Amino acid sequence: MGFSQIPYENCEGENFYTSVSKANPSWGRLSAQGRFLSVLVKVRPKILICCTYEYLPIAAFFKPFFGYKLVYDVQENYVKNLQLNPKLSPAKRARLGKIIQRMEYGRAVDLYLFAEKCYVEEMPDKTPFLVLKNKYAGEIRHVNPLRFEKKSGYNFLISGTLTPAFGTLDAVNWFKEIIKEFPDSSLKIIGHCTLLSFKKELEKACENTSQIQLKHSSFPVPHEEIIAEYSTADFAILPYQNREAIKDKIPTKLFESAALGIPVLIGGNPKWLDFIAPYSGGFPIDFFDLAQSAQQFNAALNLEYFTQSPAESILWKSQHSDFISAIASL
Image (cartoon, rainbow, N blue to C red):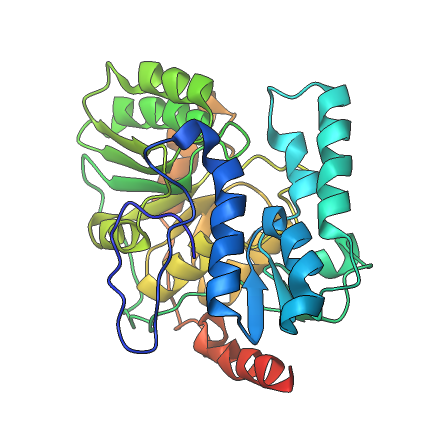
């Protein structure tokens, strides 16, 4: 049950339900609670997996009546993520943090699924747990060791959530320096932009640069569209700022780029550098040092990438059996 711009058709063994009404989006999150409860009454599941803390109070309250096992899929450290929203005052951030903690806390949860290994230390009260990383759900595309020829342009890709803390605007400014030396380069930005003010700021930053193609959406972009964009990219850019709420995570884009054979340009995050080191999957860039942009990128062009194939451990199937065993145990 969730929201999607793509209609899903029910088939044998699978039933899809809409959580948010497009007719009344302003009341969407409130009405979703009622929709969730109605589906709960109709389906009466044996196992209920909640992927958002907003459903946990209802799920916990009705658990004794329906007798299901409750799993909380912890996709983010939502309290820590409040630090990434520049529009929140410290007082409002503290207030929202307490609300989220109240909604997440409870003895009704039978199993926690952690999307990041760092959540084990960040949320010690959430037990029992299983770490299921954001690994790539396809297969590894085996490529030969990759060297770039010097040319007048290269194709760059930024995908996923577009926010100030994820460095999207920093990468745009960096790219504008790159096209001074590589004028035929292109930057494609595709993703989900949640902050209206940042959306306008990003549009303004891109509007007079023909080499930038911006495709943002108020809804998450279908994953298939993002994966398709990798086929034309020379480099994937991960310009994340080294913020406290980000630095210990391993973004899905690292797993995707590794599996698809696309080198990444990243900041100097030690964990990410360790991730790409075994197969030479990328190069560190200081996206704030605009004066050295071309020099750093020229250094990246001189390297050889994918000197060996990434390990199968970057794929979802490497942890599939752990997930099945955990669910079966319930």
